[in-house]
Image (cartoon, rainbow, N blue to C red; front, side, top):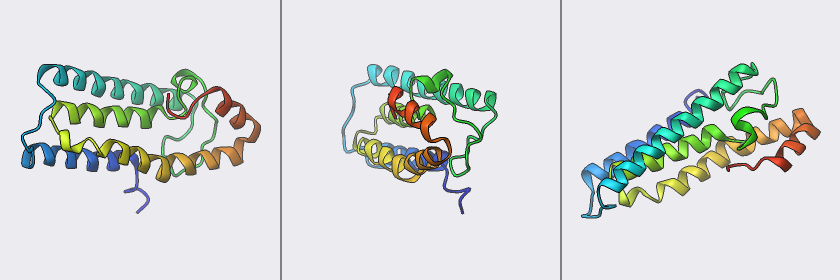
Length: 149
């Protein structure tokens, strides 16, 4: 069951809800056309780039990208010097971008719900494991790098 409880699965679920809202329950609401398509495309692209940069850095440091597993190293270089959670930030950007592209106005509340799920199910437990394993190094990292941006 733990392998089903992964951020990409939650992202796919949120995307499915946003798409279903856009297709089946549009309620006559719209973001307004071309600007939303453009902004949505930028957000999706930016989210993918963020996630890929993070995966690259974690692979370079030879540690796991699976949130439920213990990390072998504390990664604070590369994109991780800007955000402690660039993959999750990328997931949020991807969700936001698709909501804009699909004109899913009523799905906007999914964004804070998705952030809440990421924090409760993944970020806080991960940070607790890192705090126990890397103690002072993780405390210094938290002081210089914010959780999201």
